[in-house]
Image (cartoon, rainbow, N blue to C red; front, top):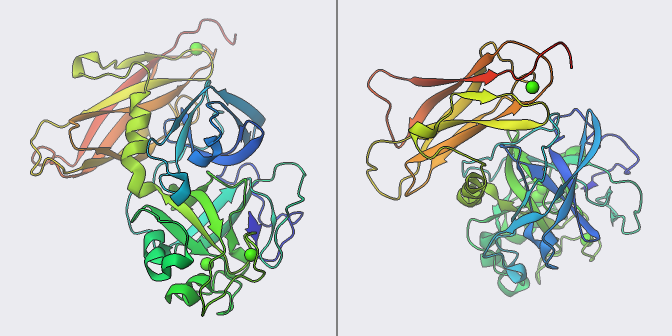
Length: 402
Ligand SMILES: [Ca+2]
Ligand SMILES: [Ca+2]
Ligand SMILES: [Ca+2]
Ligand SMILES: [Ca+2]
């Protein structure tokens, strides 16, 4: 990642452990590397499809958290089926972890609303460092650096293509890519101001842009994953030439694009759900008691069912959910989750997994709740504003401690 004025030895843009970015990982694929994002169920890392364009189907995922550095391998990768390299379209992949992600790594919910444009994003990743004035440090060969910066989602890439025509050599699918430019505070380098009259001269020292190695890393809005870093470009027309140095090096005056997570949420959610181990598919299969286990995490499921009829068969139905402590405590006995779950067309039920933390301490059986609120596209029974279910974690240890 390149930042505005700081050298990579400066700590201002460093995303050190404990800042809330510990679910942003480095993904190594057959000699190359990019970045990635641990998703809400802890089982998969979201990244860019182009990391796998050489045909590899395995990866090493490196976590840097408050408990140190840990690598989890993956031998299974799902590249989006209609990934299209020439147009940078559908540039998403899911990397399935072969073991539990560190408990200290944040799991991130998807940003689901389509109001991203105009908002300030936080980008995080392991890309080559540099500065806006000089571009990325091509010669950088130091230790992997996780950095963060801000920018603003300015436009949809397809709208930019419509303005630029042949000056932009690829065809982004409409509504699927979010674009930000790298500003230094001047109108001369305000790429999207000059190219399509979306004027904004940036966020001063907080402004940054992605470089190679950031591919697959997140753009966060409200702590949720709104974008997946995909590419940077130096764009110009006969009358506008914003790039400060005429090289594609993520300098001032260039643009970057992120695959738009709200647009792809159905593929992401349904891919994750298809991989839930032993998830219930009927109420009779729901286990209200789950064994704790001794290490890593296991999953407790809640099953949400819709018994009505959609007004339109294509409607999405959603609810908000959040775990709540009973005698079991978030961070000690289970990992707290909250977010929105969507039932897509054709779906009338969905399982919500909660990660249960294994240990070897003898303790009482303990319970926690899942609250469900705010239905959209469906209704609770008259007078009901919240549905609550409970799960009990059955201790499986004897003695103290083992
Ligand atoms: Ca900008
Ligand atoms: Ca700008
Ligand atoms: Ca440049
Ligand atoms: Ca145990």
